[in-house]
Length: 531
Image 1 (cartoon, helix red, strand yellow):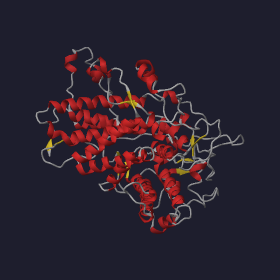
Image 2 (cartoon, rainbow, N blue to C red):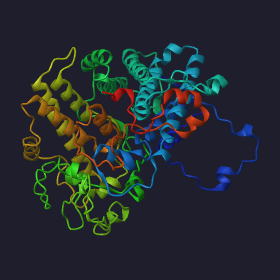
Image 3 (cartoon, rainbow, N blue to C red):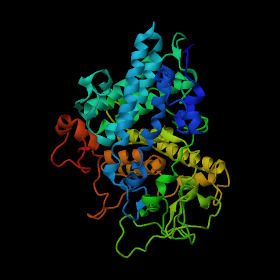
Image 4 (spheres, helix red, strand yellow):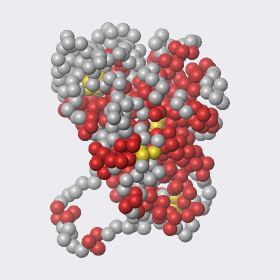
């Protein structure tokens, strides 16, 4: 493959920009030329630099800022909130929106640069890679907000006509993004004439096969999201995706500090302060067969890796739907000081494991082979147009998903910062894994309906590090993931979306009004999840 001339782009700087950890060492060094002519500070936009910036924006796309911990965990019941968060939801609706449209503007620049090249046909792979990344960002964004500007978006820098883009329907946006993934799969090429980004591709190092698997796996995930609502569009795509390369169970795509020098995925601040997170009774009841506080009923091998018992070493979860007689919560178990002083600041309720919270080497997942395994299990359990039901293939994919999830977490904990209750080995033994798979709560049921519930449960557990995806699963299955009925007064009852940022009401009011209604709130269902 051709190597793209990097010109003024410095790969080391690009990678550091991706991690977001450029340090400013002195005012004189960084701002000493602030009064010089602006012409001395011009930088040339390059395709590698812009591409790397778009990929770097995935860090915030995937974290969704404070939304994951402050709201998503309590919405999808993967954890429990013991107090009202001080972070207002309407104060956290702007960042994800701005992140998406800033990236889209950069993509318009990349497209313009490619069009100016002498042989644009040599850049098809780069165009395909950009389509894959932006399809992911587009689908993530529309599943947060619903209808959104798309066709006319990102054109504001071309002229004033683009300042107020109309909102496109969620259906058309999702179809367009999934079609872009299909285009990328069909056009990615190993032809030697294709230009490569060299070091600017921090996701796959220009590996076309990996990009193809990534695109096809995303296509399967989002076609499954559409299947119940729009099967005539989604089901043929699902059938086609199953016949093309997908992520294997032990593979994942993400921003991984192991492969990106200088990258740290810091998440610790999301679990402290106003997050008020504890292990919830919903999660506990799906990891233990009894409520024995000594943990003797725990059958899930991930439990003591992802969670920790209370200050008395007892497994006491916080009630998902607490009454008035619940004890006041004590301790601050997620502070980094506990890494060296385990006994300090522990809570009277079971909590997220302090090592999980403070481990900055955990990859930030975009999509995992584990999730693909559970999607395949669901497809073969239910059957769709073009793909017949098969209990054998469903069970095989279901077990594959569980094993890959358990192995990932045990291997990571064994090789990372875990200390207290650290796994004894990098992988579970055959007997340990077999005991979990044959447990009455886990063993694949001969009854198709019961088995489907198991698939949703195990997929939901495996998505603990991807709460946005767990929320999508909860919404698209109409609450078929583990849950308990919440009191009408609960802050998380029937939350379905983020509302549009205030800036849309102020700067794009006509189109905003067309996209909303008088009763538009966080409880208003978006098209894709309307039954």
